[in-house]
Length: 77
Length: 77
Image 1: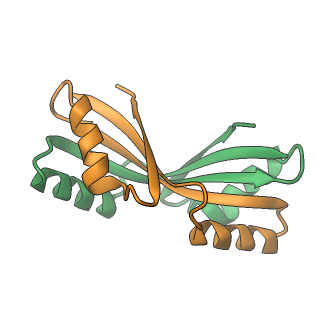
Image 2: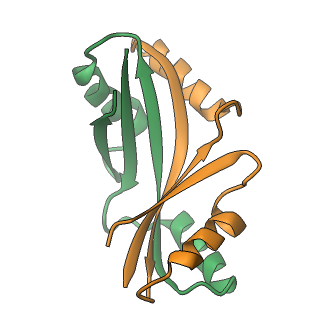
Image 3: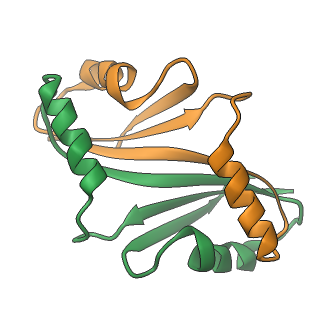
């Protein structure tokens, strides 16, 4: 079994509407924030022992949109 | 300026419908996954230098639902 953490972020320069709305809400609540970026994180368990190559392909094909998103992969177990 | 990474996960035992759907899609694509959990990550920049207490309150009031979600806070700058 292998466990991976995958994080999918919007690329720098791509407008993050959800982040802007969270920032606005936090400011309305009185917090002093200048910027918020929102990302998605996936924790994926594999039945196979060494799925390194699979993880890369999986990010490109399903989890991230390479036009506007970057992803980072970390094996945690 | 201070920058924080906040991660909001569903608590163990809470059903993760989005994760189940991602797992199903990955299996249909031929990947050998046994489980997927989806989380949200926020990168928040503050104008103040030491907003530690604010971050905790912010998670409780806006970013996480304490009934079904856990959050973790990490200062990165």
